[in-house]
Amino acid sequence: MMNLRHSLFIIVLLSLVSPSLGAGSGVVDPLAEGLRPFLEAFGGRQTQFELSGTIQVPIDGKEQTVTVQLVRFDDEAFDLALTHDEYALSIRRRHETTAFALPLHNVVFIGSGQVSSNESLKPDGIASRLLSPGSKVAMFAPLILQADPDAISVTLKAFAGAVFDPESNYWSAGNVNFGFGSKGWINIQSGKADIKLTVKSAVPKQEAASNWQGMQPVSLPRDEIERQLVRGVRRAFEILAPSPVLTNPPQSSRKVAHGELRWIGGQRVALLSGSPEEVGRAHGELLKAEAGRCIDSVLYTFGTAQTIRTGRWFRSDLDAAYKRLAPHIPERHKRETRAMAAALDLDPKLVEALNVFPELFHCSGFAVFGKATADGKLYHGRVLDYMTTIGLQDSATTFIVNADGQIPFANVGYAGFIGSVSGMNAKAISLGEMGGKGEGQWDGVPMATLMRRALEECSTLDEVMGLWKNSPRTCEYFYVFADGKTNQAVGVSALPESIEFIHPGQSHPRLGEGIEDAVVLSAGSRLEKLRERVTQKHGQIDAEIGRWLMSRPVAMSSNLHNVLFVPADGILYVANADHKRPAAERPYVKLKLRELLRSIEEVQTAKREPAQQK
Image (tube, rainbow, N blue to C red):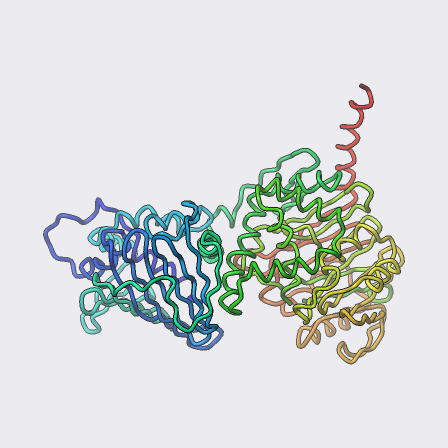
């Protein structure tokens, strides 16, 4: 993926204009003339054009080359082809048909008919549909339509310090160099990135959108194909170039029936209570925008990338997984999910399927107590290393849930997702999971459902272990379970066909020699570092050192959230990633579960009293 600095510079180069500057001087400006063909094409002054070229950029230490070809035929039709050694895609859009082809997989998804004007790929006005206020790029969109090469030339010279070097025949602005060859050709160089683009007004003959010789056609609703791509790209712009809407959101608290959103130390905390329907509805009403971003990240941005990688339509995979997992999900969870979907104005089947997302893809954890800690208390650390690249941090929320008939609990999670991957309940039980292998083994209880059930139903460590032993399981997962009442903890290796419990101090071939009063789970060099730290600080560990145990490099660069549970005290310390730093490098916020639950109970009592007086 191209470095964000390079991407933004190209966008600025093509769109940062003010039509009132520099025009009408009568003097030919070579910078303006070099930019003119690109600005006229992207500014909509050319109904037809072809843009082609290569983008070379280092990714993971290796030079990568992407070939691009974009042909605009008219306000309704275009072709786009992107080719890389490991992936390739082509889009053909015509007035009545859209095709999304994956040549390396010999499959093409084709749809015909009408599409929603708000989620259409039609070239006319597409910038307004691909860019949202959540992306900094959106500030340039209105200017693209007024592209003036004379104005942008003045802007680049005056504000970016662009100067011309006659020896190289290139312009430079900061660490970016760019030059023009024949009319309609540009080369942009920045660091190790090298971009060569050509634009011309002549376009090739249109191929029929349905004509893909040798490829397997898959019919899909056209609006589903275009929605997938529009929303996936729009969310990608937000992730790559987030605006203050996402990086510095307004921290406004609000209340609805059976729910309250608070901001504590810059983190969202949602307090929910009542029946499954009341909990789900409050969740959706409080966090509609955040849940929308979470859904767009998973279904549309990640889903599009996954479709390109596998050659399978992601939504179909998700639906297939849900069909097999659904029989093992409690009805109360389904009722809650449907109520949340209604509050979000979304198809309940879509939201139900999205809530089993962790099952399709496959972190570190520890529990220390007794002789390992400074005060004898149990400290349970949980490191979630998981896909910060798809922007889930924008929907990070800790939920405090007091559902009717269930044990109240704290769930460190994400808006739009009712399952749990990190949580602690009012009975001093804490849990954290670590993904393993086994994608496709879905004939059991979803991991996140088992986690939530344990929080809602279990008062002792034995009850948690019994729930796992007696439930059909999916895939391969590892866990740390802890009970702050009894200073007990256990590591777990769970497969569909077997389950193994690793007790404190127990040696294990995959985990190394046992450490007294400690359970330590991770992998590779992260496991070595975590074991080293626990051994080094054995007997001294408290809340501060517990958080240090989870710092880099135990936490990876993809570290989405970290939690330190102190279940005996009903306290959890939570850190969430932002767009620049992993969770381990962000501040922790101390949350007191008992106090938050009391505030829910006080609201419930206040509502009951007037009703009783009547």
